[in-house]
Length: 496
Image (cartoon, rainbow, N blue to C red; front, side):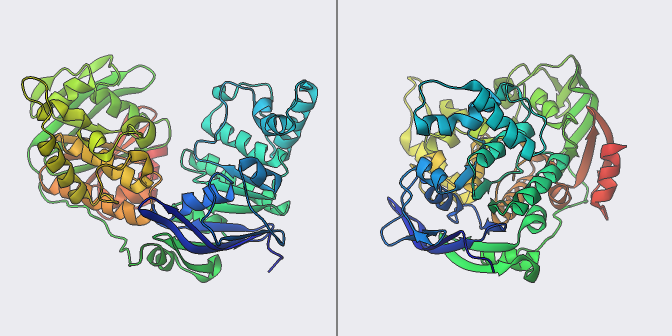
């Protein structure tokens, strides 16, 4: 084992009423990829904030960087000591150029009054060249794709001469091809002796990149293991404290009557001639490559966007949906892909988020809300979906990703919808929460709801669906009953 770049021990962090971290430890060596894994709420994000200087640990913590015990006072202090973080949202200034983003920390640190733009652009170009990127340093970041914005975030860390880069869910918004490019970049960074702390949930990716795993559970350290010496099922069991059985929930028994029928749905540039039905008690999985038109179709059905032509029927009756309010009246609910930007009002409480779509239900003729009924309803949904912590007065932003997703589900399930459309239901949540969400959706179908699950993860589609609709370039390329299916069979329809 090489000399460690970073070694922490006895690190705790207490918030009012919550012990987020309890005497955890972690270490990483130059040129190593060390994956930090655990369920949502395990304390991973809190540790990232401590290592990046955003939050101080409780008294008694020991942080050693390159053999020297240190205190990280603020983010700039962490950067000076060689630690850079690439967050899920990249934390870039989208209205500035690539070069300005890459150089901004140095500009702030030196408090430069006069900027030498030639030097700023040259430094950015050098970092981008290291990553073998052809991005123009003078391009406005907001005009770049998600994958290229991530490249800028990595280039920023390289320009800062980072010795350790923390990658927080780095593949959550990338296509398969873009993920493979990220793998190449990680290998290049390792070759330059840069340590990488990789935080993620997708097992295939974790085992592809990691040299070691450190497992947290409920804010506590569980173990550190070599990637070559542990199986996926063993790692999952350490993360969640129990065995997760990989199983299919598919139920091919005869379903009830048709609830949602779509005929000839078209929108230029998005999708064309979409035809399908979903029956009572059925889970229809919808998949396809990026750009296949999956989300766009769902958004049109829910009234978020208009259509050029086509018909939508609910229980055999044609409906004309011009807005989400129309869709809700017709019994259609939609859980969007991005829970943080589209699904939740983060500063609001769990109660306020769950009841938001149906406040009028709890108001009398004078518009006065019945607080007792609202409290009872909120507690019912929190208990049913096992939202943790079980406190309706907590803000949505204080919850882990998996529990945020449960709140979004509760918000729309509580509308008593006939059709529930869920877009990427487990994106960014851990494997334990993923299993819980799958069970919730299957139980809703069992109770008679028609459920549509849109997912780019083929294992998830195979786990949860009764039937699968595959889309390609805005069209339906085929339907498959979920019996003896493989990922390869689905992929054939995705690229055919």
